[in-house]
Length: 113
Length: 110
Image (cartoon, rainbow over all chains, first blue to last red):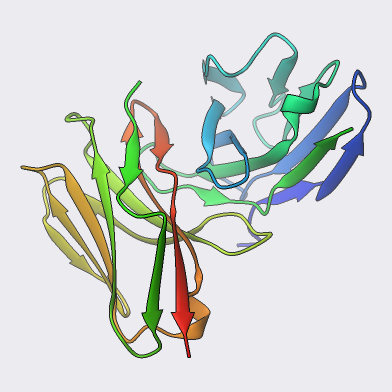
Protein backbone atom coordinates (compact mmCIF):
# COMPACT_ATOMS: atom_id res chain seq x y z
CA UNK A 1 0.00 0.00 0.00
CA UNK A 2 1.85 3.05 -1.26
CA UNK A 3 -0.98 5.42 -0.44
CA UNK A 4 -2.73 8.01 -2.56
CA UNK A 5 -0.29 10.22 -4.43
CA UNK A 6 -1.04 13.74 -5.68
CA UNK A 7 1.01 15.93 -7.95
CA UNK A 8 2.01 18.71 -7.72
CA UNK A 9 1.95 19.46 -3.99
CA UNK A 10 1.80 23.17 -4.62
CA UNK A 11 0.75 25.24 -7.61
CA UNK A 12 0.85 29.00 -7.97
CA UNK A 13 -0.84 30.39 -11.04
CA UNK A 14 -2.09 33.68 -12.36
CA UNK A 15 -5.77 34.36 -12.72
CA UNK A 16 -7.08 33.19 -16.06
CA UNK A 17 -4.56 30.39 -16.51
CA UNK A 18 -5.47 26.71 -16.72
CA UNK A 19 -4.13 24.18 -14.24
CA UNK A 20 -4.20 20.40 -14.08
CA UNK A 21 -3.70 18.18 -11.07
CA UNK A 22 -3.01 14.47 -11.01
CA UNK A 23 -4.05 11.81 -8.53
CA UNK A 24 -2.79 8.24 -8.33
CA UNK A 25 -5.07 6.22 -6.06
CA UNK A 26 -4.21 3.11 -4.14
CA UNK A 27 -3.96 0.36 -6.70
CA UNK A 28 -7.09 -1.78 -7.05
CA UNK A 29 -9.27 0.88 -5.41
CA UNK A 30 -12.22 1.23 -7.72
CA UNK A 31 -13.55 4.50 -6.32
CA UNK A 32 -11.77 7.83 -6.61
CA UNK A 33 -12.96 11.10 -5.13
CA UNK A 34 -12.01 14.75 -5.46
CA UNK A 35 -12.62 17.15 -2.60
CA UNK A 36 -11.78 20.80 -2.09
CA UNK A 37 -10.79 22.26 1.26
CA UNK A 38 -10.45 25.90 2.18
CA UNK A 39 -8.72 27.19 5.29
CA UNK A 40 -10.58 26.37 8.48
CA UNK A 41 -13.19 24.24 6.74
CA UNK A 42 -13.81 20.57 6.21
CA UNK A 43 -13.35 18.96 2.80
CA UNK A 44 -16.17 19.61 0.32
CA UNK A 45 -17.15 16.95 -2.17
CA UNK A 46 -16.54 17.75 -5.84
CA UNK A 47 -16.91 14.53 -7.79
CA UNK A 48 -16.26 10.80 -7.74
CA UNK A 49 -15.52 7.97 -10.13
CA UNK A 50 -16.21 4.30 -10.02
CA UNK A 51 -13.59 2.80 -12.27
CA UNK A 52 -13.57 5.12 -15.29
CA UNK A 53 -17.15 6.31 -14.93
CA UNK A 54 -17.82 9.69 -13.34
CA UNK A 55 -20.92 8.96 -11.32
CA UNK A 56 -21.61 12.15 -9.42
CA UNK A 57 -20.67 15.81 -9.56
CA UNK A 58 -21.31 18.45 -6.94
CA UNK A 59 -23.00 21.72 -7.76
CA UNK A 60 -19.70 23.23 -6.61
CA UNK A 61 -18.12 21.88 -9.76
CA UNK A 62 -18.61 24.72 -12.23
CA UNK A 63 -18.21 24.37 -15.97
CA UNK A 64 -14.59 25.45 -15.61
CA UNK A 65 -13.81 22.26 -13.73
CA UNK A 66 -13.40 18.91 -15.44
CA UNK A 67 -12.20 15.60 -14.10
CA UNK A 68 -11.23 12.45 -15.89
CA UNK A 69 -10.18 8.95 -15.03
CA UNK A 70 -9.51 7.52 -18.47
CA UNK A 71 -8.35 4.02 -17.64
CA UNK A 72 -9.89 3.64 -14.23
CA UNK A 73 -6.56 4.20 -12.54
CA UNK A 74 -5.12 7.72 -12.16
CA UNK A 75 -7.31 10.80 -12.40
CA UNK A 76 -6.81 14.41 -13.45
CA UNK A 77 -8.66 17.51 -12.33
CA UNK A 78 -8.43 20.51 -14.63
CA UNK A 79 -9.50 24.04 -13.80
CA UNK A 80 -9.83 26.41 -16.72
CA UNK A 81 -9.62 30.19 -16.49
CA UNK A 82 -8.71 30.08 -12.82
CA UNK A 83 -10.18 32.65 -10.45
CA UNK A 84 -8.91 33.78 -7.06
CA UNK A 85 -11.82 31.95 -5.44
CA UNK A 86 -10.37 28.70 -6.74
CA UNK A 87 -7.49 29.01 -4.27
CA UNK A 88 -7.79 25.98 -2.00
CA UNK A 89 -6.40 22.56 -1.18
CA UNK A 90 -7.57 19.95 -3.66
CA UNK A 91 -7.72 16.53 -2.09
CA UNK A 92 -7.97 13.19 -3.81
CA UNK A 93 -9.16 10.06 -2.05
CA UNK A 94 -9.79 6.47 -3.02
CA UNK A 95 -11.67 3.54 -1.59
CA UNK A 96 -12.05 -0.11 -2.38
CA UNK A 97 -15.65 -0.63 -1.38
CA UNK A 98 -18.55 1.74 -1.70
CA UNK A 99 -19.06 1.69 2.03
CA UNK A 100 -15.41 1.76 2.98
CA UNK A 101 -13.64 4.79 4.40
CA UNK A 102 -11.69 7.11 2.14
CA UNK A 103 -7.91 7.10 1.92
CA UNK A 104 -6.72 10.63 1.25
CA UNK A 105 -3.64 11.97 -0.43
CA UNK A 106 -1.81 14.99 0.94
CA UNK A 107 -3.46 17.30 -1.55
CA UNK A 108 -2.45 19.93 -4.06
CA UNK A 109 -2.48 23.46 -2.70
CA UNK A 110 -3.52 25.92 -5.40
CA UNK A 111 -2.87 29.63 -5.08
CA UNK A 112 -4.35 31.90 -7.73
CA UNK A 113 -2.77 35.37 -7.82
CA UNK B 1 -27.98 19.31 1.35
CA UNK B 2 -27.32 17.55 4.62
CA UNK B 3 -24.37 18.57 6.71
CA UNK B 4 -22.33 17.27 9.57
CA UNK B 5 -21.17 19.74 12.17
CA UNK B 6 -19.12 19.93 15.31
CA UNK B 7 -20.07 21.69 18.50
CA UNK B 8 -16.72 23.31 19.30
CA UNK B 9 -14.13 24.75 16.94
CA UNK B 10 -11.25 24.34 19.41
CA UNK B 11 -10.45 22.08 22.35
CA UNK B 12 -7.45 22.28 24.68
CA UNK B 13 -6.54 19.42 27.00
CA UNK B 14 -3.65 18.63 29.29
CA UNK B 15 -1.29 15.90 28.19
CA UNK B 16 -2.39 12.64 29.73
CA UNK B 17 -6.05 13.67 30.10
CA UNK B 18 -8.86 12.20 28.05
CA UNK B 19 -10.30 14.19 25.13
CA UNK B 20 -13.87 14.14 23.91
CA UNK B 21 -14.74 15.63 20.54
CA UNK B 22 -18.39 15.89 19.60
CA UNK B 23 -20.25 15.91 16.33
CA UNK B 24 -23.90 16.37 15.38
CA UNK B 25 -25.25 15.07 12.10
CA UNK B 26 -28.55 15.79 10.42
CA UNK B 27 -29.04 13.08 7.80
CA UNK B 28 -31.28 10.41 9.28
CA UNK B 29 -30.43 8.10 6.39
CA UNK B 30 -26.70 8.08 7.16
CA UNK B 31 -25.53 4.63 8.14
CA UNK B 32 -21.77 4.99 8.21
CA UNK B 33 -19.69 7.46 10.20
CA UNK B 34 -15.99 8.15 10.19
CA UNK B 35 -13.52 10.17 12.23
CA UNK B 36 -10.48 11.66 10.54
CA UNK B 37 -7.40 13.42 11.89
CA UNK B 38 -5.70 16.10 9.82
CA UNK B 39 -2.28 17.48 10.59
CA UNK B 40 -0.98 20.66 9.05
CA UNK B 41 -0.05 20.26 5.39
CA UNK B 42 -1.41 16.73 5.16
CA UNK B 43 -4.57 15.07 4.00
CA UNK B 44 -7.13 13.66 6.45
CA UNK B 45 -6.06 10.40 8.05
CA UNK B 46 -8.57 7.72 8.99
CA UNK B 47 -8.93 7.10 12.72
CA UNK B 48 -11.99 4.96 13.30
CA UNK B 49 -15.40 4.28 11.81
CA UNK B 50 -18.75 2.99 13.00
CA UNK B 51 -21.88 1.73 11.29
CA UNK B 52 -25.38 2.61 12.37
CA UNK B 53 -26.07 -0.88 13.71
CA UNK B 54 -23.55 -0.23 16.48
CA UNK B 55 -23.45 2.36 19.26
CA UNK B 56 -19.83 1.98 20.33
CA UNK B 57 -16.58 0.93 18.78
CA UNK B 58 -13.11 0.92 20.27
CA UNK B 59 -9.69 1.20 18.73
CA UNK B 60 -6.29 1.82 20.12
CA UNK B 61 -6.75 4.71 22.62
CA UNK B 62 -9.84 5.86 20.70
CA UNK B 63 -13.52 5.14 21.13
CA UNK B 64 -16.38 6.30 18.96
CA UNK B 65 -19.88 6.56 20.36
CA UNK B 66 -22.98 6.86 18.21
CA UNK B 67 -26.34 8.04 19.51
CA UNK B 68 -28.80 7.72 16.67
CA UNK B 69 -31.69 9.01 18.74
CA UNK B 70 -30.19 12.48 18.99
CA UNK B 71 -27.94 12.16 15.91
CA UNK B 72 -24.77 12.61 17.87
CA UNK B 73 -21.32 11.18 17.38
CA UNK B 74 -18.32 11.52 19.67
CA UNK B 75 -14.66 10.61 19.59
CA UNK B 76 -12.90 9.86 22.84
CA UNK B 77 -9.12 9.85 22.98
CA UNK B 78 -7.58 8.30 26.06
CA UNK B 79 -4.37 9.62 27.61
CA UNK B 80 -4.02 12.40 25.07
CA UNK B 81 -0.48 12.86 23.75
CA UNK B 82 1.24 15.80 22.02
CA UNK B 83 1.06 13.86 18.76
CA UNK B 84 -2.72 13.97 18.98
CA UNK B 85 -2.68 17.72 18.31
CA UNK B 86 -4.51 18.15 14.99
CA UNK B 87 -7.87 19.00 13.50
CA UNK B 88 -10.47 16.26 13.83
CA UNK B 89 -13.34 15.83 11.38
CA UNK B 90 -16.37 13.65 11.52
CA UNK B 91 -17.96 12.55 8.27
CA UNK B 92 -21.07 10.65 7.32
CA UNK B 93 -22.10 9.02 4.09
CA UNK B 94 -24.50 10.99 1.95
CA UNK B 95 -25.48 8.79 -0.92
CA UNK B 96 -22.23 7.53 -2.36
CA UNK B 97 -20.05 10.35 -1.08
CA UNK B 98 -19.13 11.70 2.33
CA UNK B 99 -20.04 14.96 4.04
CA UNK B 100 -17.53 16.47 6.43
CA UNK B 101 -18.09 18.83 9.33
CA UNK B 102 -15.98 21.98 9.83
CA UNK B 103 -13.60 20.26 12.26
CA UNK B 104 -12.37 20.69 15.84
CA UNK B 105 -8.80 21.76 16.51
CA UNK B 106 -7.35 19.79 19.41
CA UNK B 107 -4.41 21.33 21.24
CA UNK B 108 -2.52 19.28 23.80
CA UNK B 109 -0.97 21.34 26.57
CA UNK B 110 2.24 20.15 28.27
